[in-house]
Length: 379
Ligand code: CAA
Ligand code: FAD
Image 1 (tube, protein in one colour):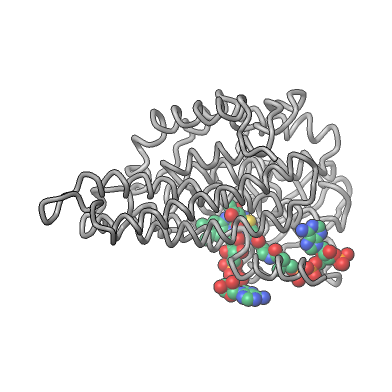
Image 2: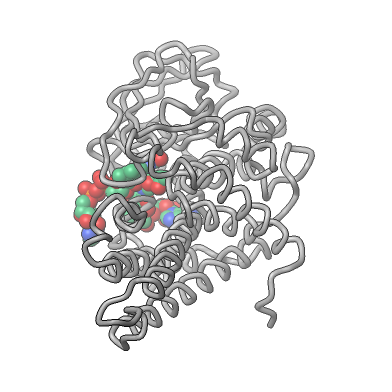
């Protein structure tokens, strides 16, 4: 057993750290305040090859692995969780199902554009009445000659409105629950495809979350992903890996909050000495650091399993469950270490705390992760 990252993974971490420090961190608070997505940041990630980390070069990727991918999401989220989820949704939710289930033509076209960062991706599963209960979705797709006609709406879509390529799930057979769902690749600009409400959120405010509306939207039948009826399995297997991307986001947020708390505890003096010299504070920091490390190990392990072609669904649900809860606890404690200053926008820890909450909700709530893990243990 070897817990050491490879030279290539270490180099990627350093490159992403430098990029995050120089190009992402300086505007993170301002973008959060203004709820502003910055496409230029995504374009720069593309220049560095981050938008296609695990995909083979023939599909526009850099032929690396899933450990490198989670390292990238972690390091981005360490300074800006919105930027972390932009990459995570693009790569593990929009690109992965095309890599896994797409035919050669779909990979050469859509995956290539996603991997090179020419196009930004999004994944559209959730609906107003179908969040945890995916199979109850109502968006429909009916074959009409050479096209599928999509009708309905999707909500909460990360990268919604700004993305170019959407993996959209719809019912091709309303009477069959899971087996009646199919997956489609839908391009921005397709007739009948528009955007609705943009959510005003507690956290990850510079990541747009938007409603998608389909009104007699005509999608070429070549854009069906897999076969009719494969949609539920495509959606679930995509989430198996996607959840580990959110675990990585949670690890990054937690590490960022810990870094800030350690620095502050060494500098802030009360009663004539740094607050870090109180055991009450240093024990808090020790617990936070231990939890970050445990969350990181679960996350890297799940990514390693996926890279090795071993089963990773349970490991990924566990990493997301543990890392999400750890990030929430750690960021609350980081605000506590900062005292009153932590409650203001003068320091980044209040943003980390707001951002951490989403990691317990999306890509399946923590309750759904327990349901997934529980079913795997007992099936
Ligand atoms: N891979 C392949 N197949 C799977 C699977 C998986 N991981 N999980 C289930 N299936 C198969 C089952 O084997 C079963 O197949 P058969 O019918 O052939 O037996 C079928 O799918 C139905 O499975 P279940 O009975 O387990 O389905 P369910 O209706 O009970 O739902 C669930 C299971 C886990 C609760 C699922 O609905 C779920 O994951 N809900 C949460 C939704 C979610 O995570 N949404 C995230 C949206 S994306 C997002 O949020 C983006 C972001 O963060 C940026
Ligand atoms: P509900 O399913 O209504 O759940 C409400 C509560 O009931 C939760 O606490 C839940 O855990 C609990 N609950 C439900 N069922 C059970 C059960 N069986 N056992 C125990 N407890 C249960 N979706 C996409 O498709 N693509 C995206 O890009 C995307 N990005 C998102 C970004 C943001 C910022 C947000 C907020 C959401 C995003 N989502 C996205 C949707 C997200 O995945 C859902 O919000 C999430 O799956 C929960 O669904 P829901 O909000 O409908 O809650």
